[in-house]
Length: 294
Image 1: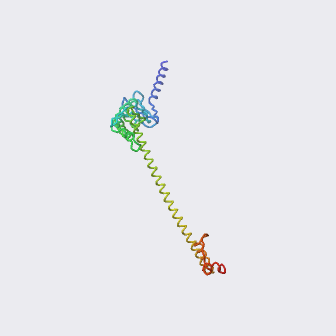
Image 2: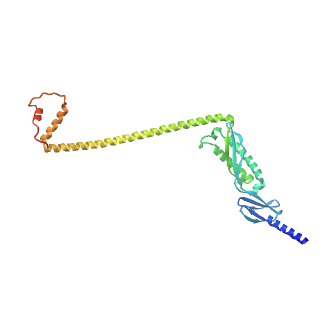
Image 3: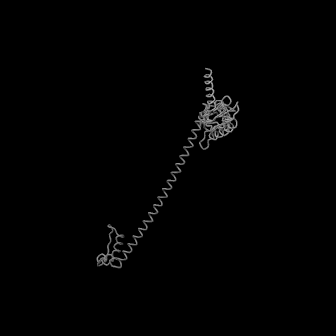
């Protein structure tokens, strides 16, 4: 019976040694092996490891994944003594597990320290900015630069003091005390009016450009058409002159007769009355036309 008890005791002790001597580290965690409170091994790669059984050596595990901390809203004053209510969030992760264990050890304590650092830095940054500059247009707004500066300063402090990497500090929500809303609405109205004027001015400028371009194109088309018409007229007159010349040389008497008739037609209309003698050249031309056409 005693042998059985000893055997069971030895088995239990062996199981205990095996269970406390094997360390399985996951990809999402750090593991620190301590011996009587002193860190003897820092493990950051996922694998199976061996250590001395407890209580000689023990293991502490810390999550290496990115953490999100949502902070409570805080009312802060700007340089021109106007208040805003800002609700921030923080992205952070453990950078140095040994320093993290020595300074905070637990996540709750770490988040309290981070929150304290951020409230201090955000309050200082907002206090140095003008209210209107925080909410200007995107290209001139200081809100982004404010939180970039806060991220850098908090990251430096958290890294050196806590072993924590601050990835980003950003505003989750910005609101305003009731007494500030009227001035905000007035500023929004002023900004919209400015944008409307700018858009109208740009529209007028674009319309003027289109009109100018259209008039230019029209002048070019008219000039081109006039040039082409003059060329056609010139060619027609040249052709007519050629035909007249050919007609003249083929039958000069008939050519002279037709030219005289055209001249008379231009001089007299149907209501014109004239009295001529039979010896007048006009009467002679009418009574004695040329013998034939060319």
